[in-house]
Image (cartoon, rainbow, N blue to C red; front, top):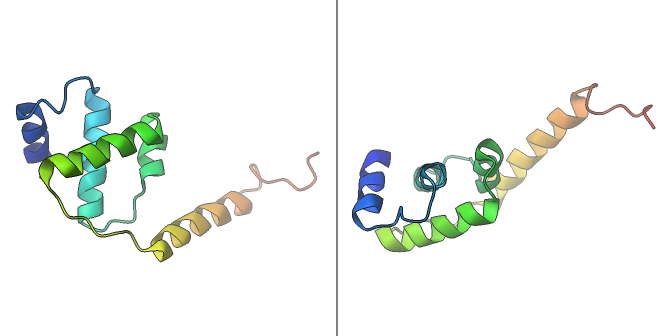
Length: 101
């Protein structure tokens, strides 16, 4: 599916002015949203070191170009993911040291 979307983007000049990393992140995020994987835009931004708003803007344009209908993500998934990251942060003694001032 990703390869097909990438070819469509190239054929419709969607890739012009965008780095291949930005285009790849946008396509992969779109596929994750279509398949309802609990991976978020900020996760792609962290992994690729690309501004989250650039990926988001590219995502919106890609969805319009491909005429895809994507459901709104359930807020419970977002909260569950953020809370799990928060607990990992708190449980790591190297990151969180209450005696360190």
